[in-house]
Length: 396
Image (tube, rainbow, N blue to C red):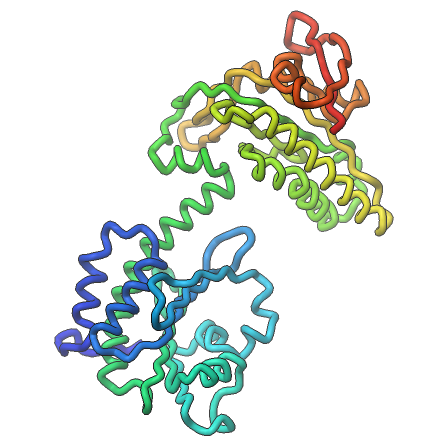
């Protein structure tokens, strides 16, 4: 990427100054990108279309594309999955060429099609009346390469002054975008590993060991049955696939109904539904209902391939928990602890003994018994608690 001499004025000098000094309060790179394109137009560059492609660290997505076109006030955002590199939309595309090491890609869209590059993207741009297209890598630190493209419908395409002005923008856009993208990546990684609510607290500065808050919540602990036997007898990759499918079946309903999964523990999970939401307990059981349906569908699919059905147990209780940082001086876990969590864990352990998939404490059942049909199971000794606990089963 050869930038023009920094002392040579270009059409984009005002845009460069704005990117450097006028974007400090803007949090999102898509908004900055769209405003940059509009300002480039206003500066006299005949910009008709522009895209910005970034690689992201996300468990589901390889990257994201921000696309701006003439007349838009905001950029359109599209997420890109990991399989895209095996599809025709990527193979032979500008993104493919740039990621393979090209430092500039320029395509005259007015010339004979037979003489140009062969990819559906170029045909689409010609059909929209675009005449010239240029793409450059955008460099972030540690060798990370992203991609930015510009296209025009001006007869004859971009001239040398336009290209020089666009090149002048690139280093500043790289700096401005890297800050925003890393901020977003930090949030995404925290949300991925500790959940959305905990990530907000951590980003707000809740990182000191022993700090936390008392939260009243419904606590749900789920565990897969006979996992040791499965892991001993199944191929490793099959075990990982099984766990992922099982966690999908359980986790998606929890998130949908406002719960937060705090951790996966081997083949188990711990989730809470804070009671600041009035319908939290009802939402927990709605999540359990949908998880049960998802597990039934998963077992049906597994049965078609000769796999045994998966069984699970869920223990549910309600109470006060300490929600915060626990661990060593250099390694922390953001989680919940307290007698209420221990109770939910003991109830989950009892599900196998009592032959019920879902066991609820009396304290939790009292909050939902008017809305849901529950089975009274009786009073049972619970390890670690002095008095027998009255239990209910939920079959919904």
